[in-house]
Length: 192
Image 1 (cartoon, one colour):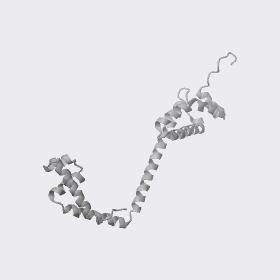
Image 2: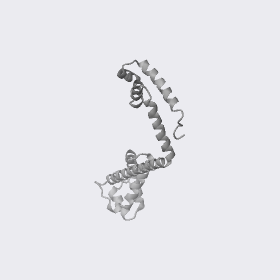
Image 3: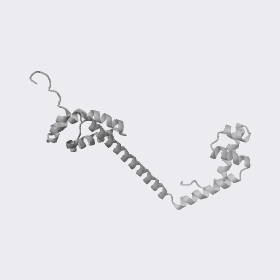
Image 4: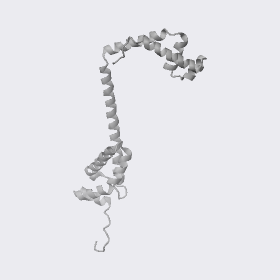
């Protein structure tokens, strides 16, 4: 540096050779040179910034451990680091997905275990009572109930199918709901 010009940066290959010889400061230089690029790449691949930070750390731990077997492309370690980042990030995403599926399975198992035979019996009895209440409706009211409640038709669609006015459908459904609620009043709400 006697000429006043800064030293030319060492190539990644030279730094890796120094790392292989046990020079930790050379690895620090390699890290400083590529950490931002690796992290930005990890952010694109990972679900959260925290996962990207973890993936970046794992990439450089792996690079330190595998320094003797890293193959450079040209004179850069960056392609190797980015491939390692991709593999580590995707493995983290797969693990997170497996973990979330296992949690969902555990939640589903817990719900099934919580439902006692008493609750199941109450559900069956309520279902029977609803079926009986619907069976007692007139044909047009039963069709109207099925169209709007079970098939999700709008009042206008149900009116067109039944050949009645929109107002008629609205009024009949209001009366139907009141009658059904009254006939089911004896059954307590399941799970309450």
